Length: 432
Picture 1 (cartoon, rainbow, N blue to C red):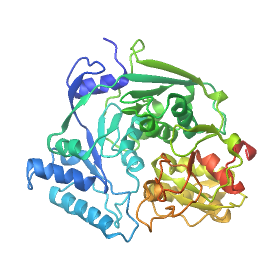
Picture 2: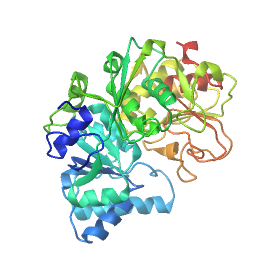
Picture 3: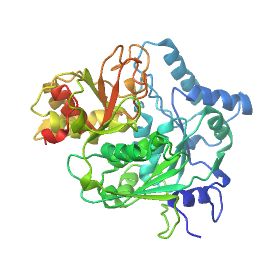
Picture 4: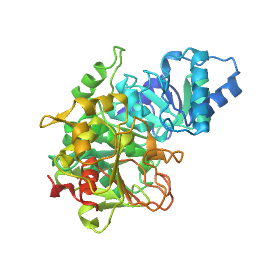
């Protein structure tokens, strides 16, 4: 029987020949990811159910990446990290990326693939809704709660329902002013905030194949903003090269059958897309950037698992080189690898760090989630009043970046950078 890539991955993880949408199955996990926000709760459930001295099901498959509330004086945040540190030491976990040490990485959804923990055909569960990011490398990846994660930590398996697949085919030649963020915001704007509830969102087509891996990550990252169970892109040579450069562990990619059935098909021509934003207070509030020129801004923010990758900063630097920002512009690289890239990557022989400094951006913050999730009051970039923000992050819910009075507009790094220069929402085509 023909199956989608999501169904094939789940069938293999369940030791079944065939699975059907809506079927409840036990699947074996390849990776359990957690961080400083949900990790303590997951550990609490695990120790309550399996015993204080119980061991995790597989030390090699539990990955803990603190990233959310790291650079703060908040004692509760420090206590969370210390709890993870103690647990990792007791369990002798090899993949605990400890803040304050050379092993610290930054945002989990960018660090996990960078460190070689994401492989095509595998199953990844994480205690964070944006775990769906990792479907960009041909894995089934989805977010789960602390209770499920605590059970999984002890058993290595989880009961889940096989999701139906919504297939998005994006063809055409992508204009230089369009990024992955524009593509996914357009799709979410079309289908709505609940348009993919508990569905696999499979992305394919010439335009998707032409995207860099980090741009594919942006698209899969925001599948959850349409209610998706997972986002996924079939692996190709770009995927295999990326993964093989980061791990020597074996893996077996899977692909959708050509004649597989899906719940619904959507088709797009990317050449017709234009730079866009999501208006407050939902990622589904799509609008072309050119229509919002009257929206004056107080700050711009470039960072997060969605918009803090090296590709994102290169795009912003293309706009900002030789120009000056007119609003406070916050820069937060997602990981240490990205931060290093800002020093070494150049445009016209000028390092990205110099471009941002000469443009008048604020000092680059150390890698973390920073203000994407609001954070304690001393979090870098956190809103504290009615600041109007344009951001490369993934959510613009009320109070998401701190203040409940702050309207947040989501956009690509190109649009955010162009808007930072003018001080109002700006279509980047004005600079390209």
